[in-house]
Length: 332
Image (cartoon, rainbow, N blue to C red; front, side, top):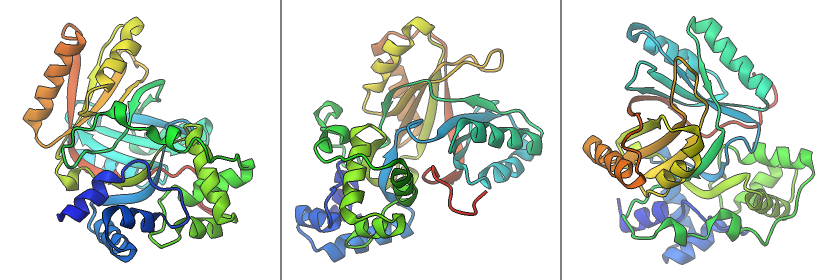
């Protein structure tokens, strides 16, 4: 990839401009034309390196979501994975190295509908689903440093601080329409917020201020380019799960979440006797050995060598896209 392409992907995963012509502002920062920025993003999205450009919402800030797991016999895994991926409510679906070998994320507009989806998957597949909703988050980012810069997380302003000045709360119906219009990303056009506004029945300025307010509230975790890690060289994707005494999980979760290799760290419920782990962390690395070395390093530095853990590497990605928080008219 060209240096321009790397900077476009690396430097704008966070702090995306909330101005009428954001791609023109990005172009000015990179010293190129707006047309070149838009053409590159279109190409990268078509090539699978970019999932979308837009908002990443904090889990449970809109609707209801959960991580779910199933133990599927190997000879039925493709069949059940296809069944799960067909649900509009499922946005991520992976095979992982474990007895619980199928892991997916589901999002619905409320808890009742979420549980109905999980129950339907159980009935149609003939296999139980572990429902593992997020209880507390210690670090959620999903940004990837593609240039191995030395910028530490603590130096970043964060989306809430960056957009703290701009927000005006929208009426609930308008906020729902705005979330529905942006959930799958911004259109790659010169005035994307105007285009979003036309779809949501809002003015361009209302879209910008509404997004700023959602960011200030923490509903939007970050605004920017959402990359696909596997296509950009992060081919060792591991979910590391830990059995931590309940009284220590918050402190140790924050310790693990401070490591640069960790993109997610959060507490989820145990489901005894099937599932004993209560702390989950995601590590993305270029190879398996590097990830295992990072796990050993955090065990030592956080003082958790005595606690049981497992490393669940991904084998196959069946589905990966942004979550659908607001159903389109006529959708299931």
